[in-house]
Length: 220
Image 1 (cartoon, rainbow, N blue to C red):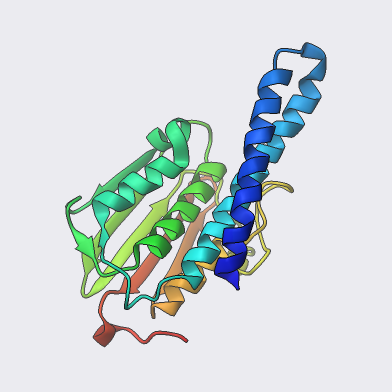
Image 2: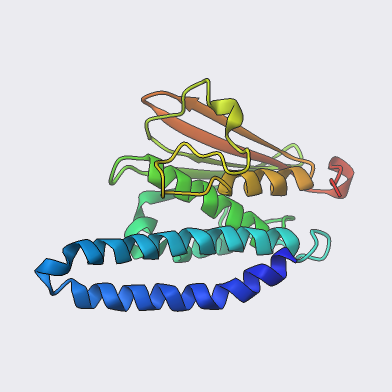
């Protein structure tokens, strides 16, 4: 059902995004219509967030982990950068052992999870501040971390991060489903999602995912 809903909603959301973009371009040339142009920009932003959530839902409900092809780190880097776009992609630094390395992880779910954490980091960080993505294989696990230099999350709120519909962002900036879906994916693979944060210094989200059937217990 989730995969079907994501597919059916993808087309109208794409149409809304194109229409809002074209209308904003037209209104940008009319000074008196500035507020309307800003509203259209907000519509485009919210459409992007809806598409991100639908992508996570579709990946979560799609191909089983056992049937999925391996994940090439070069493909992960390429796909994350492509979905971020030319403006935001240069702010993301990847540190991986070898770009030609492959991991026994479902590509779609893993890429969408990394992308959700990266977007959260970009939203939380000052303009131009970099986001660091590190990937390594250690003791039969893939360890993928995303670190930002944002304001950090208060200790009192940190245990709630990952609850559905809970968000530390300003109203209209997110639905609070991104981290929830990332955690659901990681735990379905028998792994863990850890989030560490220091006020004034930033936040690090770390996925620890077993790579073989012998080293994990898959949650139904």
